[in-house]
Length: 223
Image (cartoon, rainbow, N blue to C red; front, side, top):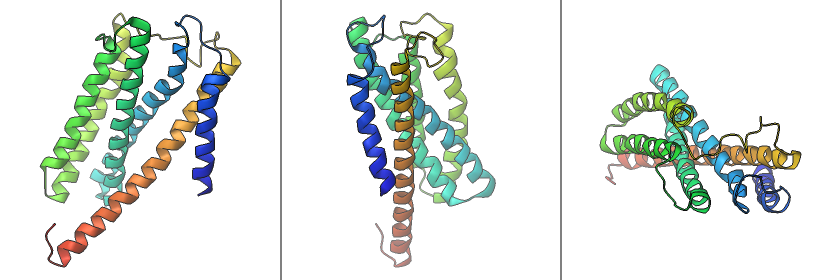
């Protein structure tokens, strides 16, 4: 309870700081740079989620622990959610900066492909009804899917010309002023904390659903 309260306060502080404390970044029209305090952390959490899903899937395939599959599925779902949010906020930024919500920029194209790849993950889980086979197939697919993540997120967008800004909001950029850096890193921590809380909640829900399904099956009631 205390952690959730502190996380709520921290998120509220970061949202307020993004608009009221940090200065608008140079090189961006108007106040458009402020959206990156949300867009970049969302993309970071999506990548972290897919990585965790891959690791949990590997553990499940090695040890066949159902808890690992719960973690893999939950991380994949949250990764997909934050990937969608990153796409939406990126599109808003693109409209304000380039005049169109979608420009088929390399980063926009790569994130669209990534969404389709992980959308297929959920389709696979829905198509297989045997629980054991579903977990095995999903685990293998999760590992193969993550192989594409580094290329789509880090490699492909950088080997072709892109409208996407690369250095202005980078924490390693010496030109980033202290206020901007503080809010940027604070937002990264806030979104990471939000992800951890949502992940634990989602895993708990999956466990409850599994227990409910087993109870109905044992009692002879068909859902």
